[in-house]
Length: 328
Image 1 (cartoon, rainbow, N blue to C red):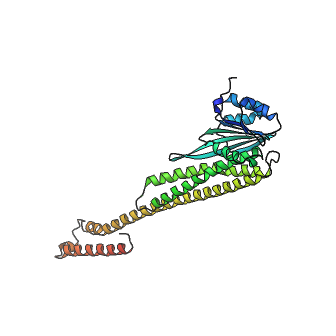
Image 2 (cartoon, one colour):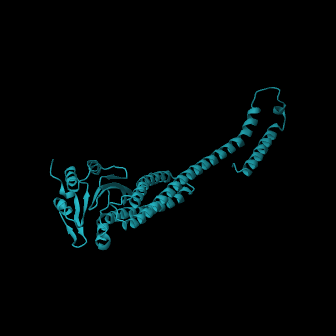
Image 3 (cartoon, rainbow, N blue to C red):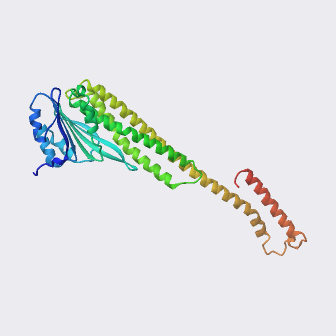
């Protein structure tokens, strides 16, 4: 097997309540874990297989969890392998005008936390710095560091949902505009797809956080459960907001379809009204256009002006009736 690519290692440090933070190499992890104090927090970005296999030896990780961590496109989940947990969560961030989703895989043990980022996933330098500013809470162990990472991920969902709301408000104004805009429909469908992907990321996060609040006492510090419950509440709020927006987008599409149908109906009504208006003179002129000899009106002196007057009267009567019925 080839040597591991260490450029994938973003950060590797040991946190000790007495000695504080100290950076270490991957090769030193097993030596640190052999000591009774401290825990290791390792951050990776798209590591190669040799590096993951080396971590398997250092932390004693399960081969199935290593296989999942090596390949992206995992569904969000939480699984227990012996005395460690494996989590797969989806992240979201705005890149330009698009919402891009990434993945983070997490290994949690009694004395270690390993985060593996794939795709468009933000750096976890911010939650790491936050934890380092709170050494008394970091004394809870790797479970508090896991809380900081998950809290950072869920907090990044909130502004994206707010942007979805703003986009929907703008599109609703276009929906009720007098002119039909095909671009509005396309943007509504794009928004519906992004909301569906957001829900696929957020909804499983609730189940993951619920397990961390209730289960795994050997890995989750009792005091840190309160923090996981707070993240769970945020995830519930994001999920409910996403569901509400999805319903509003569906309603907006239905309203737009109804408005288009009504507009088409108005056009059909006007065409039908003009067709009815033209039917009267067409009938009368075609009637007297027949070449029968025994038609007394043809030889009458006032036959032509009478026909014109009758035709105009019928057309005027139909016009007034259709106008009152708002068909013209």
